[in-house]
Length: 274
Image 1 (cartoon, rainbow, N blue to C red):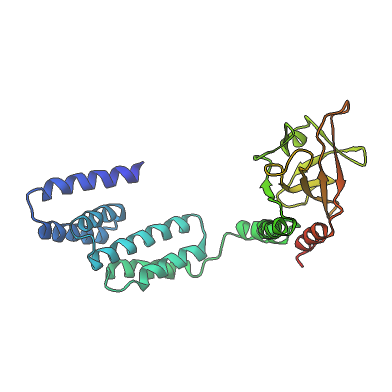
Image 2 (cartoon, rainbow, N blue to C red):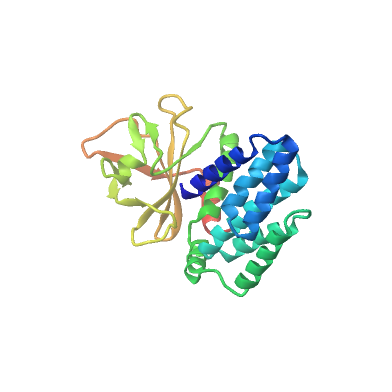
């Protein structure tokens, strides 16, 4: 909100100053104010003034270069505060690589590069990233499963959609997976109740960790709907399927291991990084 107010006030003041000026004079004065703000290291004001200049001459290459440099520099400073050194360096390089722009912005960018070049990424962030990369389940594997299921849909001539703990599929009036995760229904394997949890890594103390859900329920006719639970069970990838269409006294939702070899082997290969 503070940044926005700075821009609004700056633009308002400049509008009053330039109200009686022609387009070229307005442009020249806006660019002069931009340069002065840069020298004073008031980059939010500089951004506002260069926007005013571009209103007078939208295609002016120098003004556009100034605007890009200021934008990249501000983004670099945001990354610097987060101690994301690599991203900071990329944005500073973007400032430096722009030709026919502000030499002062290039000077600032080079100074910042010298300051942060010897720094390292936040060790805690590196540790978290390394942990995620080595996990049994992660975003890369999740994306691989999406690609696999897209091809599997074509092979089976069915349309499988992805669901999650915040996005249920409706299986004959039961919302999955939330009905099972919340305990309203109990997942049963071979008639035995099991407790499951949603997992982003496939790792933890729980025996049955649900990492993905796919279903064709939206497009298949009655009694032909499938819901697949992709689970990691004691570090072993397994795919369970249910087609249950009615309730029972135990309030169990019965699942069986899929008999589809392509599905079973595909998920296993993804989890194992093959």
